[in-house]
Structures are given as C-alpha cells and as structure tokens.
Amino acid sequence: MKKLGLILVVGAMTLTGCVKDMQFLSDSIPEKGKLIDTVSIPEAKKYTIEEIHSAKAMVMAQSIGEAPINELQDYAQGVLDKIIAVAPVGAPKAEVVLIGNSGPGAHAAREGVVFLYHSAFEYLRSEDELAFLIGHEYSHVLMQHTPENLFSMLRPYLLTAADIALGNENNQSDLLRKAGQMYGSDLILRDLLLPNWDRSQERVADYLGLDLMVKAGYQPKGASGYFEVAKEAEEKFGANYQVTRNQLELFLQMQFQPKGEDNVLLNQFLSELGNAVSTIQQNLAAKHDDAAERAEEIFAYGMREYMPERASRMVHKDAFDSVVKRNKRTLENYRVAAEILQTLESDDGEIDLRVLEADARKAVSGPTASHPYTRWAFAKVRERQGNLKKAAQNIDLIGNGEILALPIEMKRAEILKSLGNTKTAFNRVEEVATYYDWPLETYRFLYPLVKASGNKVRENELLIGCVTRYPQQRAMCAGNSPAGQMAGM
Image (cartoon, rainbow, N blue to C red; front, top):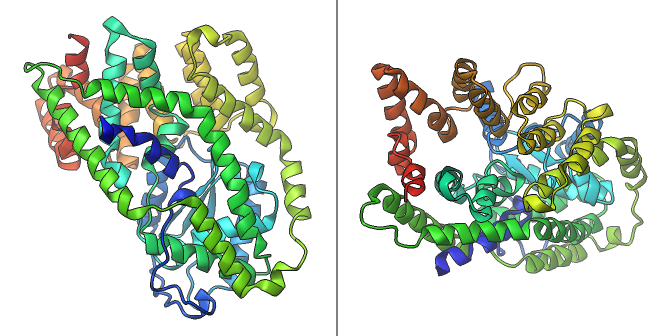
C-alpha cells in the first residue's frame, strides 16, 4: 500500500503546474552574472497551424475550457508582449490563453501558448508578480523545453477506476461515488495531468523568467512575492479538496486488495495501475525538490543580480488593481462556481440543493451567462438534482456551436444518451474524437454502441485504433471493462 500512499504527494506537487515542479540548480546556471547573458537560446521553430491546434487541444482535453474574460486575457497578453520585446533576437511569438481553473498556476506549450489560470487575478497582488509567472512560462517556450507527461501514463487507469466506482451500482457507497465524481473535476485534471519539467529546465525558466521580467521594466521583488502568494493560494486550494483526495486514495487502495482468481481482467488492470504508480514515484524522486528551496534560491539570485532594483518601489500595482476591479463581478461569479464544484464533492446530506441552485444562477448571471466554467457548475447542480434535460441545456448555452472542452462534451453525450438521444450523442462524440485526436473517453463511449449495432467493420476499426493508442487499456478497448466485473462481485 505504500506505493499508493504517495498519491497525495503527487497531487500536491502538481497543483500549480509549473509552480510546484521543483528542480535543483544545474550546471547551466552561472555562479556570477545574469543567466540571460550566458544562456544559449535555441533557434525558434516555426510551428504549423496544425501543431499549434494540437497543443491547444491537448489542454482543452484536460480542462473545463477557456475563460472568455477578454480584458484580463488582453492584459496578460500585454505583459507577455513586453517580455517578448526584450528577449534575445529571434525569440518566438507567443499568446496567452486564459483557462477556467480555480487553483494557482499556469502551463506553457512550446508551440507558443501560455495557458494562464483565471485565478491568477485573484491571488496575485501586482503586475510584477504576474510578470514573473508569465516570464517563467514564456522561458519554457523560448528555450523550447519539452515536458515529460509522467502522469499521463496513470490517467487511463484513473478513468478505469472511476468506471469501477460508478459501475458498482449494487453497492454504491459514498466512497465509491465520490471517487467517481473526481473524474472531470478540477482536482483530477490538475493533480494528474499537468506536465513535469526536467529539473534543469525548470531552474532555467526560473532564472531566465526573472531576467526577462526585470529587463522588461518589472521589479525583481515580484518573483519572491509571487512565491509567497502562490504558496498561500496553493495551501487554500489543497485544503479545500483534501478530503476528496483522501477518498480517492482510499478507493484505489481498496482496489489493490485481492479480487479472486476469476477476475483476470480486473487483476490485470490493478497490476498495471500499481506499476504505473510505482514508475511515477521513481521519476518524482529524481525530478522534484522542496518548494521553499526554490523560493530561497530565486530570492538569493535576485538579491545578487538586482539589488538596486529591489530597493525601488513597486510601480505596477495600480494598473493591476484597476483591471481586477473592473472585472470584479466576473471573478466573483467564477469564485461562486468553484465553490459549487467543491460543495458537490461533499456528502449528499450536507448539501442544500435549493441553495446551491440559487448560487449557480448567480454564477451564470450578467457577464458570465455563457462561460464554460460557470455553466459547467450549473450543469453539475442540475445533474445532482436529477434534472438531466436542464443539465444538457446549461451545456448547450456554452459557446456558439464550436467543440467544447472534452469533459464538457463527454458529459453532454452521456446526458443525451440517458435522455434517449443516442444518435445525436454518437454523432457529436465522433466529431469530438476527431478534434481531440481520439482520447480514451471517446472510445469508451462509442465502442459499446457500435458493437451493439452489429457493424463489425466499424467495431474492428475502433478496437484497432483504441489498442494502438492505449495498449495498457486492452481490456477496455475490447469492451471488457473491469467495472462490469466489479459490479457483479
């Protein structure tokens, strides 16, 4: 059981994306002098439209979607543009995409996209702190760093674990139900799917990000200030979901208990899940160090290289406060939506659905009437109330017909299927599957329907495609979900 006991540590380390991906100093960090003056910048690669789309789609497959708060996104883009303007010659362009996520952090794709969580405008205190966060992420783009998705190997197993929990209808305990609810929530997305940078890469991004922000006119104290407030925000976010995280760990521990010789497929799944967890922990042991150490080292670097600037007053606070104030209602509605999602993780007996519905109506009022994050929260409330038709209507109010974030699309498909609109759901999921390059969730939805239809050609196509992409999920690809075996035990 010890190899599962560290799952909480895994989650805690990845809660802020790059924020908690700690690395030691590497040989590329000079003992004296600014890193930007000594580092070798790789030649910027020209990415195709398809490659950029793929990078964006990967994040949309792992999130609840963009946060269309245009003024905040434009403001962050302005900060990024200032940083790019002072970067070494040949530095690539990049864009900011605001993501609806209630925890602190950001995530960069080397194709030139910086995904910034909307909550940055709630816990950061100045443009200087924002500049360090954005500068750090852009440094990954500038240096063309490649993240290692250590947690991606565990994701298919967590999806199957959720299936087991939800499929155990004969004995649907609170523990299993809550473990199943983890799927699609902020928590599992953040804890398990964000990339982990190599130690040397992360350290370079810290130092280079500080150099770039200061060169762009920001105060170096914004870097140490960022670590201070990010730590507080992280502790608050982690505390909110600690109970649910514990429940998921307990659920997984239960699944490691012997299930009997007749459950061959289930035992295979459990064995592979255990191996995946062990592999992750071995990699983490080599790739992470203490957050406090990272903060201390960037503070010392700033003191050494930017002592005169550190004595200057903060000059980028008023503009930051002003843009946050103008978007106060939108951010407040997002906060309410986040609290709704958190509440839905608690016991049924502790939830007053009428109060939660009133909160959800507030979340989708005014400027956030059609935002994915707020509508997702309202849809989840309707689903808990058992009103699937209105849950689907909430999702339908998001966007203008474009493909939505994967968890939202799959939830709508499940609801439509439950309401008897199987053909509509099937056709939509095929579109979604193509858009997101056939994630496991789409196979899981489509395969049983195709198999039941008797279309052997299409059934074989799906089976071969699924096994090719997800060899560790052979049983599920063949329609032999461990959930069914678990339910019958």
